[in-house]
Image (cartoon, rainbow, N blue to C red):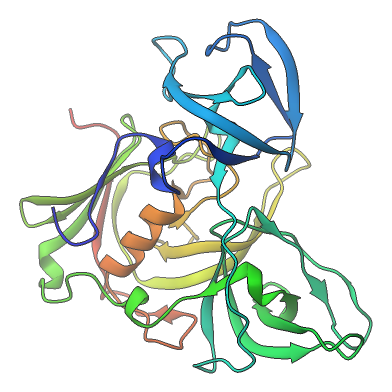
Length: 326
């Protein structure tokens, strides 16, 4: 396996340490708690969106036909399906009063971080930022009300800024964003996405260097098979979409966005579900943030340090989306 490469056989293995006990954030509006690790098990209660829970361990459960067999045993008792839980950590960061670079990628290192719009003018609550989401930090602002520092984060959707606390955000160094295997000729790299397996494979010639479970387009939003190239990349993006109340989404800080089509299909990290192996997306190719960051660094073209976007049609890594290996 190449540098940074790792098989990802289970959705729980792609975010944080697998040492238990650990902590989790509830991702669904209501997540059922069962007496046994199976959907058919008796329900004993439910957890609400953004609840934080202690997780004692994980195990294999569910029915044979389930795509994702990972369940979590709650420290308080009962079992929940892993698809509705994001494993999280709480890692504080040093406060910088000056940025080492004019613009930097910041990654949230706490379960969630609240923000404000318009510091020092008309402060108002901003979007909530989630663990392993990424944000473009382009300044430090001191709050005139109490003298506290805030990181200023650019929002592409509104062409504006929101502000969050430095302790909640880790600024990534140039080395952490450096290309992986730049010495490999571009034509030697290609990605294979197999829809009936919900798997992504990265190849260098005939050598498999990375694989990960994915979640592609759900019914009505299918990821179209075909040959593509990565050509448009961003370390973070505020994504919105949907056609009605049941399909609308508004997601600031979607991490490690590698676009493969002009229609907006991208390989990107996902923090709003943990159900990899099951079709969930609106056409994109969902990965864990860890896997998406590896793909972002490995694919061409590379985003230069200090830049928040690159668009170079016809220069990127080939991507083959196929229905099946058959």
